[in-house]
Length: 176
Ligand SMILES: CC(C)(COP(=O)(O)OP(=O)(O)OC[C@H]1O[C@@H](n2cnc3c(N)ncnc32)[C@H](O)[C@@H]1OP(=O)(O)O)[C@@H](O)C(=O)NCCC(=O)NCCS
Image (cartoon, rainbow, N blue to C red; front, side, top):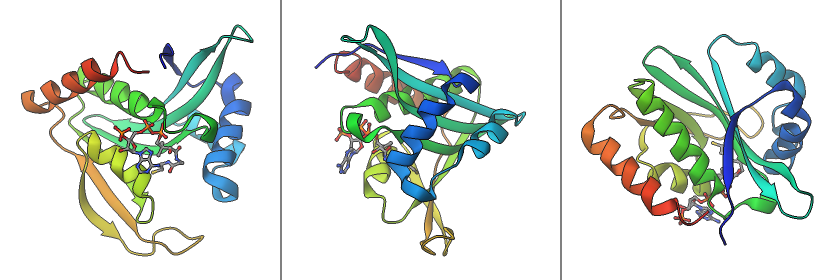
């Protein structure tokens, strides 16, 4: 299947759809609308959506989003979710890949995130794009007291990593 996707800055007007995706992908413990509004007002926030052209409705459908904070040379991913109806089709990978590509251009050096120890699906995605496990935050998540793994990439501005990202982008550009 080949769908054309588009990455755009997350806007306030996208929030109904983004909250819908957050609820369906993360459940009741996911972020509520006010949290997204606060994030959009945060000076350091850098939020994106990924959308596809809906052939039947002739309109763009947002299928996922990625949130981050970028402070000078450091990026931190705060949230990432793909609508369950569109999971497993490569959109998470494309969103993250294109986000990392932007960080390369913006001269960001480090990228970090936290992920639930049980969330192997997300960890697989992160490892595929070059993240490494750097540590554990014990009982980090208040809802289940689950540990968080700290994963990061600290080679963003290195030639080898940039060549690796370019290879992935070339490889996947024909797939989604
Ligand atoms: C994690 C998530 C963002 C991945 O997005 P996605 O669009 O489903 O993933 P993709 O189709 O792009 O797959 C990317 C990689 O993820 C991994 N992956 C995807 N589905 C998987 C599954 N069912 N089991 C294990 N690994 C899986 C694979 O490594 C895959 O690469 P491959 O297709 O080359 O094997 C998405 O599943 C999601 O929104 N999950 C719920 C919210 C969440 O966990 N967010 C992360 C918080 S840290």
